[in-house]
Image (cartoon, rainbow over the protein chains, first blue to last red):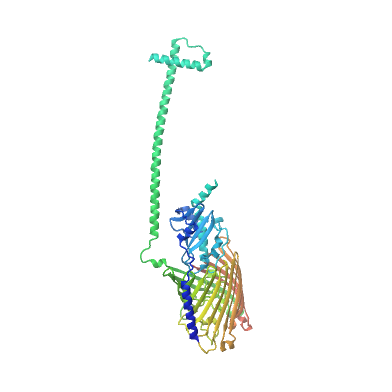
Length: 183
Length: 440
């Protein structure tokens, strides 16, 4: 009886694994595809933001560590800027695409998630909390983000990415463009 | 020349006469000498004006030359700026290319992570029976993680732990392998695990870094009933979906609960820890979890084991565990609640009255972020109803956690434990605990 049950269970498990392995509904997205999607195939030329001392100092207060690299690439169309940022949660970088429009988070999407925990942060039911967020005092977000039990580090990584994108957008020409339109 | 001067003088005189009506009223010069004097004055004035003109012309010429020189400098500087910009961009390209270049043979550093956690406790507990007082300091856990990614879909997780600082014959501590499993991504939603891993049940069984829970010691309900920390060897499959629903199903080695001696029918004593573990009867565990609303977690687990002692005919047969919990965190307010219970079959476990063992707890908390740190206050009520007399009690706690940074925590709590049986009143205690913990 015990052997029969185990055999049935093993067969069932094998069939389940076979079914699961062919089921493919990917939620990941390549950064290039993300950019093409948000700019509706009218992709602007990639621009460069030099990480000056001022940018680096302010980024350090947001990230809690040094901002790596000499230059950050971004895409800009009018008042919209798009950023692809990497930030380590617990062990590995989380790659996130963020669109800032008029100093407000318009879109935020986890493109690549490599962590062992915290898979919830890559889904809209979590990231939708960031939509419409702006910078409050001290580069904090203007709202509380509810976390995921056991995924605190991944949640905090996304918060840092959101704050960084808002900060970097201030240093781009998008601010100047807004001023020109208002004159 | 003399005639020219005379003619010029006459012109000036005539002009002056015409333009100055008042002057017209003056008397014209009478003599040639007077006229010559006037001419000489005008000549001097002309020479003066001529000199001024020459000076002005020279100044203009000099200004033109300077402007031309400045324009040349501007052009040269613009070229220098362009040249320097090109050099800076080239330097940036080169620096970034160096940053992206990895020396041969060092790929393992890129794909290997080391982490861990630790906690030190101070217990100051006074029991009704003073022989049972506990005033103790202990480095309870020192844990290291080694994780490695073999490729995008295949990875290793491992956890090695030292408890109570010293391990070995006659020592109070242990060195334990708590996790060592390979994880494979079947696709973006489904994973397969194989090896030694934590059973998917409860709250603290899988997530128990000290900065993730309140109270210096882990709660007794999960420690005694589940029994946390509980790991087995086997395989599991799991799914995680955009709705926030996830599930796990594991086939593993099971408990080997003793049926005789001081630890008879004590669930925690049934943990084999995958150390030459008997695998006569496997355990099958399933869990559903919902985390689709940020700040909310709902979960339920069920485990079946055909023989919870791994020994046929000893009077302990089937074991079934049911555990459910809820976690809610919204703004300042947090709440945890958990129920876990075992149901055993068998003539011996029935006769001993150990066939039902259960426990539950509820823990509201408030957490604030006044500055660059977090501070939280909690209270917890636990009810444990296990088999041993000493494992039947109520406990109430009140305490706080202080997180100077998210991964470091200082803890304080006061607690009181009251046993159900009069025979165990000597074990009743109250007192406080202090703790320090970290994770990285």
